[in-house]
Amino acid sequence: MTGTVRSPCLAESINTALADLLDQDPRLVLIGEDIGRLGGVFRVTRGLRERFGADRVRDALLAESTIVGQAVGMAMSGLVPVCEIQFDGFTYPAVNQLVTQAARVGGRWNGRISPSLVVRIPTAGGFRGVEHHNDSNEALFARVPGISVACPSTGEDADQILRYAVALGSPVVVYEPIRLYWRRSSPPRSAEPARSPTAARVVRRGTDLTVATYGAITDEVLEAAHDLAPDVDVEVVDLRWVAPLDMDTVLESVGRTGRLLVVHEATKDVGIGAEIAASVAEYGHDALRGPVRRLAPDRRAYPPGDFEKDYMIGVREIRDEVLVMTK
Amino acid sequence: MAVKSLSENETAPDDDTRRTLLRHMLVARGVDEEARRLQKQGVLDLWPSCEGHEAAQVGSALAAGPAATVVPSYREHAVALLRGVTPEELLAQWTGRTFCGWDPHRVRFFPYTMVLAAQTLHAVGYAIGRRMQGLEDFVVVYVGDGATSEGDMSEAMNLAAVESASVLFVVQNNGWAISKPAEEQMRTSVAERARGFGIASAAVPGRDPETVFAACSRAAAHIRGERAPFLVEIRVGRINGHTTADAQEVYRSSDDIARTKAADPVTGYADRLRGQGLVDAAWFAAVETEVREIRERLTKEYA
Image 1 (tube, rainbow over the protein chains, first blue to last red):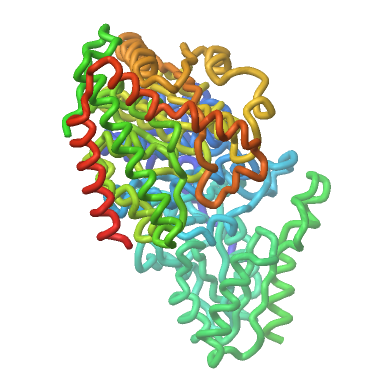
Image 2 (tube, helix red, strand yellow; image 1 turned 45 degrees about the vertical axis):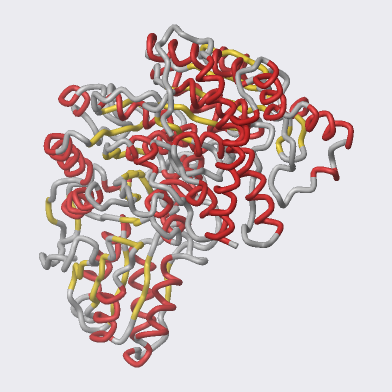
């Protein structure tokens, strides 16, 4: 064990970033269920209504299509809406507005408008949430042209991603892992900065095997990597974005290590891991010393709380998989 | 051509306005006929005809005035032309060249939205956004009866009501959601439904553009005065199929189709103004020349 380090938690970093952005840009407006008076069910937007007013920190109707649909209209009017969906599993009523409208508005207007629109979605499990409160549906949007999808695993990255997203000129969905919102200690990471706001980050340098991962489970991957050292030296790539995917960083890493394991919390089939594996098979085959493998839950619904430990990928499974691949 | 706007309390059109209404209806009809002809030739991929909707579209658009921002569905060709979209621009997307042939900012007429009722939430959000920026816009959103079954329509009405958004909902009820008749779509009128959401509303017949013009002028005055939404449901006849790809003869009786054609708002209004001596043969000849030139231009551009 290498232990853990104290770091600002995700919720605080996002709160600070949103406050800064509201302060700097009068066009910015927040829309979401219970984000104002309550400060959000996770308190991510705590204090913002008091500071910036109910007009700019808007308690939305409990209707997700309304949240994103009105945001599309607001973006057309010149505002920069940052929406919050309360839980990942409640995103689906807004999918039509995101996929058929937000993603296509710029093209439909022949580039005459390029609306920035951010949708923040608390995501992933591990906290005994009831049905629909533990989903990971990032792959759904990752394959929609016109939508960028970010999956930060630290407050620092969330901050950078949000500041980039509000100025992008096209919609960005940001998945924020619920179990990281208030976590204050995490495995140590390399301080190496990302090459660009949309680039992946090599969060641990290693020589024997690359793990590409993203989101909350990045902490488990890092813990497994630290556990395995010095017998196996694992390199960890935190993708940070799943659309666009920074395959350059993944391929360069695989070029150094010769082995790739993809780990994610979303179910395996037709997922982000499949896309990465296919790209490495296409463009990095010569570097591979063994087959690319994926570690992710089977294709089934997120189970009731009593069974989530069986469902989720833990540190032990990651260690075991790495050992199998490097033996 | 200039679009006239009226003072808030004036609702009955004057004679110039009546001639303007008819002229826009005749031009829209000519463009629609040419588009249908070009579609038969394979030049257009598809065309959702607005024949039968002209009085509703021209009456509402003229009443809304040139300052309003229009958020259309996909059949508001008469509104588009009245707002200054050129016939060439209007047809461009149906020939496969683009998703929107005009500059939406220039004419304040947004791109067509194919996904039913999605634009209703955009319209309300746009109105809220403009108000927040101190630019109170008057937004007119068009939607058909079939699309009012979509959840987004109900969500947009509720949002507009609770936000008191300056939005005029214009529902063109042509009695058919492609093949599903209105009586199988709803147990009440859309106007009545709007009142359930707390939105003032009116239901008017859509054959006479003056009736529509008066109702929409009153609605616009309400919206501007109260800074609150209003819904006008206009009953129209759908002369052709849902689009050129729709064979309405399969599901619609020939009597019904014949009755709808006989109640054509364009010929009806032309006969009326001619009978009243407001327009004469020379006036019609001038409009016919204009329409013929438009049709020739469209053929030259696309055929």
